[in-house]
Image 1 (cartoon, helix red, strand yellow):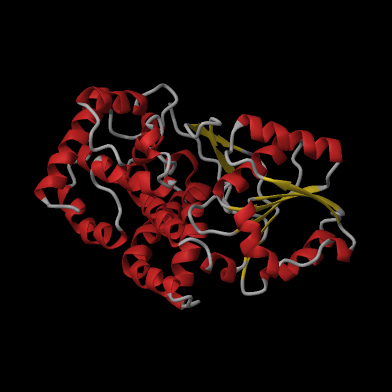
Image 2 (cartoon, rainbow, N blue to C red):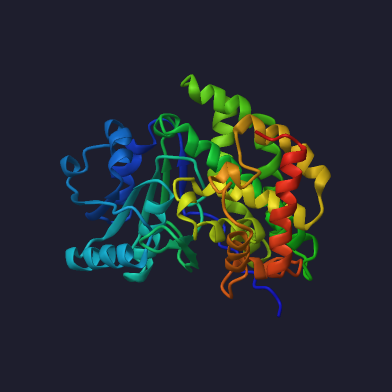
Length: 369
């Protein structure tokens, strides 16, 4: 069956600049929005609050809602009911990826309510993409949903993201480089051509090359609180370039094997403390073993070491699991709804299991710490 190609390229408006939040009142007025549901995390609001305009003082009615922690069906339903009961004109989502994914999902399912996103971290492309990654209330990933409506406005205040946890930024870098490895084979083997797929592959290429060239310096600058060119370039690559890959390429450039491994790892409670991008980083290595690209693994190894990214089960707090438990992870990676079924290489439970075991041997041979 031919893959689908519907380009959902970008938010309707995207602004990344110091003082970006100051544009919020005029942006709401331009959209005829007077009553907003404001969904946010507690820590995120603490970081962003000093930069936010006083919306009630500008004449807007704000319903303040604290995020419950997971982009789950229960949380989405709660926000939908609030949107409807309050008759809100729009929803503002401020926080990390799960806050923004919840805002997008609830807004669409409530009747295409306009969405305004204020990311406080650069840990993924949630602010850019028109999809939501879904979880159970216990943190287990259950897939994703794509929406036909795009975000109305994204406002990026670099000072807020610079003040966010560095671990989330590093996880965002790891999630971003996965865009290249997961889309490369799909785009190479596409049975169709077109400028959209060309742009998708070029965006994916930058998702690898920019972090490899600039991420270590960007992370150091972040530790020192510097709004440097290196940091801004990597920050926007995490948010924008990574979103453009699937935005242009659709099913030809979606997450596949590395994210399937991430999703499978979430069945283990021991991994729940690990950020999304960290588990994806491990998934990249499993994928490269499946593809027998050991030279590429060696090329990545210094980068992984510098960023303290995982390449072994021990790195994931799974060093003591049994062979049978490893097989259960492989089984989960091959469940019917798994992203791995879009992978151009035919995979089986045995193939994924063998790749995990082979990666363990490779990690030991390369003395990865």
